Length: 412
Image (cartoon, rainbow, N blue to C red; front, side):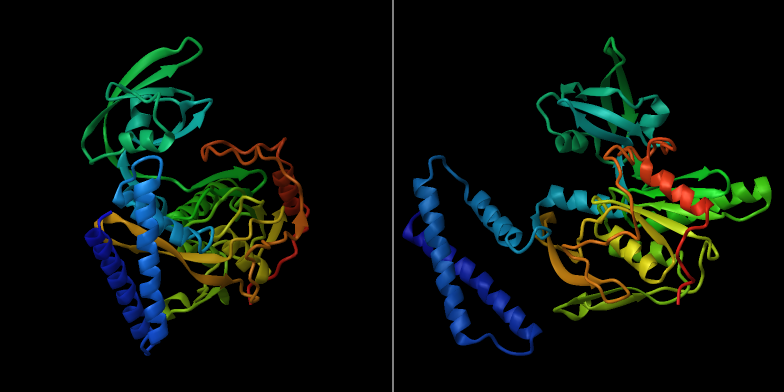
């Protein structure tokens, strides 16, 4: 790196640091101390020296843009396990996971033994209507093999502009019979909720993640079970099992809305951070969708973040019994901040607290009733049915509902 290039790099980094200090000073209503500014220029100079050494002496050539992006990733990743710099593709994945919407053909896929296995087509999607089946193995997209691709690259190739065509080639059955499907991409809404009516008069609802449509999906699922039960016996549900096992979380407001479905009043969650936007309290509104019917919430070590907000709120208001094993313990809130050229910063901005004021970060929620489970339950496929004979946690939950051994009271 030439002296001129190095000087330009120092000036660029210094300008960025200076701007950050200026913004930070404005935020705090006070200017940055002179010694802090001097130290930042010194650090910018050191960064340029390190970058120069890497470019000159590293065993393989490295692009400037790659080095700078790696530096940004390292800077943010070193803060905590949940903050990260996102490139345009990663930001798009985050957007899809929070909204539950994308343009594609509607397939849930996974890698099994190095193959791209179709877990399930989404009901009503182009893939479902065309006859693609769970268990099919994707071998090519638009005539190009997927053998050397990872899962994310394959998913990206199946997505695209609404109305555009894509051809999927799959192998089916023990004889690996090839089938080719030409599909037109559509707007897909991924489901985050499935439900099933357990007899007699007990509902089961599984939430696989929390996105913008989860509360609405859950409300529809409960209404559907209520209608089914009312039509059959003229009664309301006698109880509900809310399965949050292996649910990694998602959108905080979705967790608040889900909790609000079962509460009449009171705090759902509070958060504390450095900025006004990161400090807030969310409260419940009148209207319990189950009218006080007992609830058992199933959790395990895979229940994190938004799942723990729901479990904590229902537990602290004595609205539900928590059953299973200790949850993951993620009591931090991340905010996704858009940057230039489609990139973004996912940054931890708050710590959240349950209604009792408890932080569950790194400790998790201890269930009211501890029942060891199996990694097989629930099945990662949202469409899979419940196992009423092999799922020990589900069996215990049903038994407690039937015997009325639920310790809860109306929300205060």
